[in-house]
Image (cartoon, rainbow, N blue to C red; front, side, top):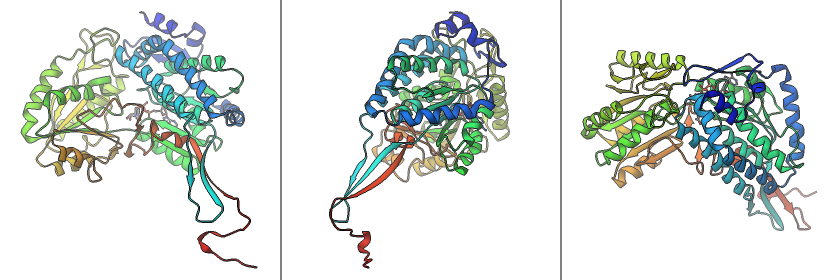
Length: 499
Ligand code: NAD
C-alpha cells in the first residue's frame, strides 16, 4: 500500500492531513505524511472544562454500563485492526506484525476492562465497635490526562483510557507529537463506539489534543485534572511528576528502562538467544522494556557472544512494511545520532563494539541501523544510561550475588529477567533480595508483557502502574465509610468522653 492508501484506510481524510503547522513524517522513508493543525494552548481551559462537565454525568452511569462502552471500543478496534496496525507501521516504523500486535494489545485491554467494570470491588472491614460496619469503596476521581510516547503510539492510550472510562473518569489524550496520526485514527474508533453507545456518554467524555510539551503542560498544571498518566523519558517525568504533585494531583509515571537479562550456567542457550535477539533488536530497540544489558556467566559468555554475532549478522534491516523485515528504522535522525554518540562513549569507556553502523544500502531513505553488540569491561556510565536504540551491552559475572548486584545497579527499574534451570537461582532472583524491578521474569525476555499484570517500574522508571492487576485503583478515589447501626455511640480505641 502507498502511504496515501494507508492513511485513507485508517479513516484519515485530506482535511485531517493538511492546513496546519505540525509536520508529520514517516520514519520509513522520510516522506511527509501531513501538516496537522495543533491544539491552541489558549483553548485548553475549555477542553478541561468540558471534561469536568462530562465527569459529573459519567460518574453516575453504572460501572457495568460504562464497561459496555469499552466493549464497543474493543469491537471497533477489532474491525480497524489491520488498517490501524499499518498506520502505526507507517508513522513510527514498527514492523508489520508489531503494528498489528500493538492493536491486539488494545483489544486485550478492552476485554480486560469490560470484565473489570463488574469487579471494581471494595472491602468489608471488621469494625472494633459493636453495631458498626466499615467498608472501603472506590469512586470515580475525575478527568484523567494521558500523555503518551511515540514508541507505543496507541496502546499506552488504551491501557489508560479503557481503565479510566470503566472507572468513571473522562479522558484527555495528548499523544506524542511524533505520532499524532495513529492517535487520531485510534480516537476515531472510540468516537464510533460512543456514537453506538448512545446518550449515556456525555459530550467531552474523551478528547484528543494535538501538540508538543506546551499542550501537555496545560494538563499537568490544571488542578481540574486529578490524574496525569505520563509515559516517556525520565527527563519528561522529572518535570511532570513534581508539577502534578505540587498541585496535589496524582501522577502515574511510566518512564525509561534499562532492562537486563542474567544468563546463568544452566540456561537453555537456544532459548536465551531467541529471547535476547527479540528483546534487544525488536522494535529496533525502541521499547521501554527493550533488553539493554546482558549479564552473562563467565562459563557461557563466549559461546553466547558467538551465537549472538551469528544471529545479528543474519537479521534483515529494512522497510518495516516488507514481509520478512525484522528491524525497521529508528524514529528519526536524532535517534540515530544518539546511538552513534553512545557507541563512541562505549568505546571510550573500554567497550568493544560489534555492528551498530548506519545502514543505507537497500533500505528506503530513513534512519536505519545495524544492531550493536558491545562487550564491556564493567558497568560504566554509558551502560547505566538508557539509549533508545538497538544497543546491547554485555557484562560478565561469576556469582549470582554479583549478577543481581549488577542488574540492580542502574538508576532505572522497569524490567528484568534470568535464564536458568536452577530453581534456587530462579527463586533468589524473584525474592526480596533479587531483582528490584517492577517486572521480573524467569526464562522469558524482558519485553512483551501481557496486559493482565500491572505494568511499570521503580526508581527512575517512575513507580507508576498501568494495565492489569489492581492498576485500576490509580484511576479512582478510595473512601472508607463506617456505619453505626446501634443505638449507642462508642468511640474507637476505647476512648471515653462522657459529659
Ligand atoms: P518524550 O519524553 O520525549 O515524550 C513523551 C511525551 O511527553 C510526549 O507526548 C511529549 O510531548 C510529552 N512531553 C515532553 N515534555 C513534556 C512536558 N514538559 N510536559 C508535558 N508533556 C511533555 O519520550 P519519547 O521519546 O516519546 O519516548 C521514549 C521514552 O519513553 C523512552 O525513555 C522510553 O523508555 C519511555 N517509555 C516508557 C514506557 C513505560 O511504560 N515505562 C513506555 C513507553 C515509552
